[in-house]
Amino acid sequence: MANLDIPHLKNLFSALSNEKRLKMIELCSDKERTVTELSKLLKLDYSITVEYTSKLQKANLVTKTRKDDRTVTIKSLVRLNNSG
Image (cartoon, rainbow, N blue to C red; front, side):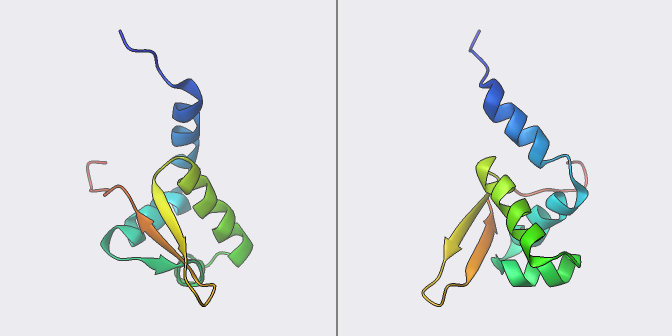
């Protein structure tokens, strides 16, 4: 039996426990989005959006890339569907 990476699983389940973070994954699964876009689409403060995307990144669910113009784009590493 393989050893479970408990800290990683805790980060993963914590990241997935919020409806807005799940929506972020969904929105970023079709195309990259900026933090500003996500903030507007989800009606969240920019700082909360940054916090949420960082939590998703820590759980290896999204990637964050800083462009030359300092824009941060988010891309989902997973694809959600109606059955989860």
